[in-house]
Image (cartoon, rainbow, N blue to C red; front, side, top):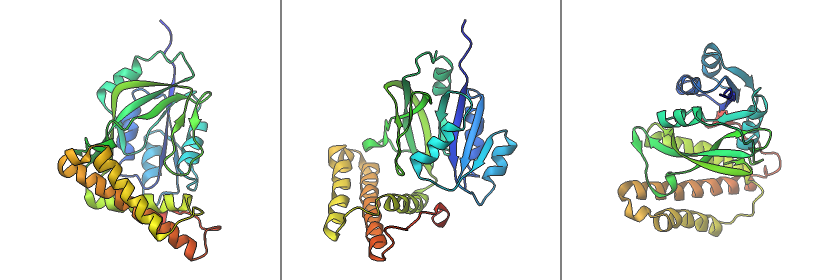
Length: 262
């Protein structure tokens, strides 16, 4: 029987003291190493992670893709499980990973992702299956150099029929607060994009139409309507912030500090 390939967990954090212990304990059974790149947290994230045996490196926030790629590059094993602090592998996913041969370095394994508000699973629109490649070999795959909403670039994707549980929002108020952070980050990324009042409305309307009509939110009750309205709200706020950055003349030297938003 072949020896099991070793896997490293790569996690990026900022003020995740509520989540990081659960995340580390969740992946410990399948990961031989846990590497965390922390964006200068102001809470006990780093202390908790180190006490649980994780290797922690501090680095100012570089953007989603660059930060996750940095965490990946710091692992000592070639196979990497990239997971967020507010995510957990379900029991079937852990069992599935343990059974993988990991003999093809060109494969990136994707998981279905269940997104939650509190204990409520949002099984609506494109919130599920919301596939993400999270297990890959760093010699053949890497994160796209995108500062917002990055993804793993791999030669071949194999879809696993198991789930990652994403406890994205504690409640609806937390959802709105998190959108403040994400919209500010994305506005920073898009600060040089040409934008007008009319285009802001178009982006917002299209976001609602796509989720409510094209993705079937209209047939999914209050959850479908909520997800669609929140998507429109997010896009409206994001592009209003782009416009604000441009109007105050900081489109060339504006920087993003996650500490200002959460």
